[in-house]
Amino acid sequence: MSRFCAAIFGCDGLRLTAEEKTFFRDVQPFGFILFARNIDSADQVRALCDDLRACVGHHAPILIDQEGGRVQRIRAPMATEWLPPLEEVQKAGSNAARAMYLRYRIIAHELIALGIDADCAPMVDVARPDTHPFLRNRCYGEDPQQIIEIARAVAEGLWDGGVYPVIKHMPGHGLAVVDSHKDLPRVSVPKAELAGDFAPFKALNALPMGMTAHIVFEDMDDAPATTSPKMMQFMREEIGFDGLIMTDDIDMQALSGTVDQRAVAAIAAGCDAVLHCNGTLADRQAVAAAIGEMSEAGQRRAEAVLAARRQPVPVDIEALAEELKAF
Image (cartoon, rainbow, N blue to C red):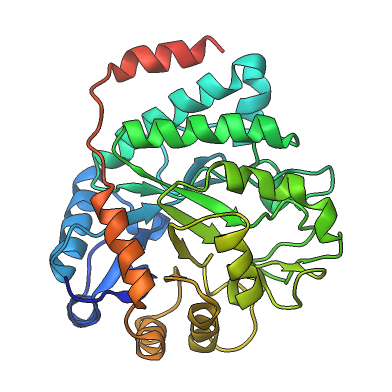
């Protein structure tokens, strides 16, 4: 297998342009990510997924953020409308893990029917009372052990539906009090007091893909985790994550420099792939030219992801939905 470009790219609209098709064919990104701008109807999404994979000549992972609540790219009537994750957990109480398994098993069923086979979940950031609102109600709670139990259930629900789970945001985003889409969060808490934030990532370190956090832990390094070799080493060695690590969206304003400079810094730090969600085709071209092919280790991890793909386990989705309603 030839080397993939060290990137996961978005695309502009409901169908690929001729220029996009040529670019993806020539560059060979590892995967793709879809947003609301790419969603109109079930047939249209399936056709777009087919076209994306045809460009690269392999069954490329196609990602989406389908957490529920605010972060839900596919809405009714094409998909179930969900409460924000934290509200679902609170509503289910002692049944939270089962409820979240059911929720994400249903989500997986809806995604795989459209050709989408990776969901950017579970999100295992540990919430705090002052966690920024952009993140807080997307969390599963404030207790690391409860988060671990729920996150395992989320991952299992996705896996059972044939959808890759993508754990995020490594090594922990819950202490952010600013929105990393707009600013760089900085955490001054000593490393010795962060074990609870790191624990869910350690507990789920066998998942195939993970996403970084654009956040600075000042006691560990002064660079954002996405572009910090020290933080990447921490994720690999202390958290023990040997799956494919992608950046959070490289366009987010927590990072400085041009988009291609950010991408180069992330790959140099040790990320396997740059996640480029927005911007223009020219931006994607600049990123691809700057980062080139995956490293040998990145390619190994990418091939392991492809080899880990699972087939959906047959299930009565209506029965699962009825069970979930009881919580």
